[in-house]
Length: 79
Image (cartoon, rainbow, N blue to C red):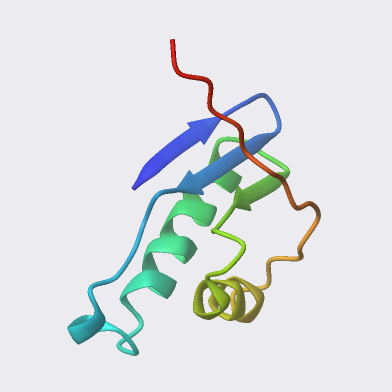
């Protein structure tokens, strides 16, 4: 997992639960702990993201109380 902090927002990114350990509340506890830490730091927003085609992750984020605010297309240019 990667935690990114700005002045008012903390983001939790690049986290996943192995399939054999899903549905045990592990990821939910991670999100809750990170959000609690962010609130202690005075942050007003807690952010995360997932791939557009990862519907299971989208449902997880919604169940955790996240609201979708944006969709993006990423680009890469080789050097």
